[in-house]
Length: 295
Image 1 (tube, rainbow, N blue to C red):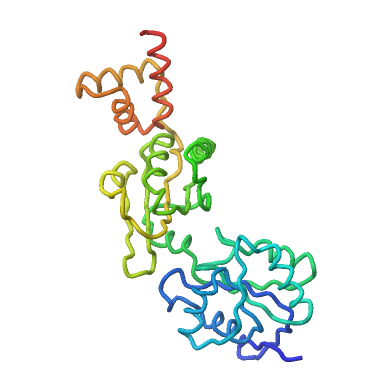
Image 2: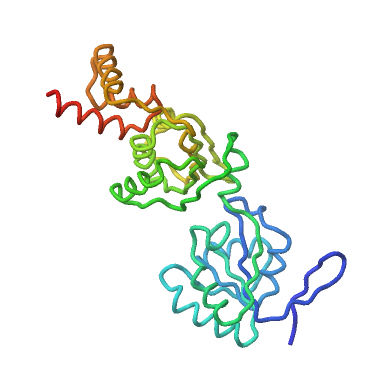
């Protein structure tokens, strides 16, 4: 039986076949891949990939000719059984997602679970990931943090989720698609208040863009249409000592803003949230109660 060799501390260790390697790949720039990842991808018997077309570009760029087999969210259960059989027969397999680290908002969990349940060794080969890449450039205290993956795509479910974490003091990090980024930030502004946020898109790519400011500032500056590239968003957590106003004080704030600016109640609520740093939803709910009591 042949072996895969690795260099550690000047000595050659042998890793027997029948091992599943979870290999991180670049999130944009093809140079962002480790020497170990390249060696593993070259020496395994098979590379299972979320998208064989994208993975073929990566392998070809580094002169790697290992056979590819697709494994994605739509075929993961049945394809995992096939790959498990190969592993049980002594073959070595590497799994790569489209970009970044497998199982971090990407497929691979079912394959890992099947391998571990059947006594197959599963080895991480770490590397690129959008989450730590964004953390490294955020510029504000981000630890501890809550990573949420992709938020629910439908607004009502997304808003319920944001309401469930609105009191979290840790930073909130999530991924979002360009098609939903504006709606998601609007929901966050409504429910969480006008917090500090960093939004990064196209990380490590030619058109990489990183913006930071209040949620309202990003919404005002960023066009809603035509934006491309997946986002990594980091929101500051709830203040340790958030502003707590009574309904009377909220009413006074709203009346002051309405008289100053002559705006709608909705706009007055948004301005009160900005001034007090209280979640807009809390101010709006209080405004509705005041309106019912004093029509």
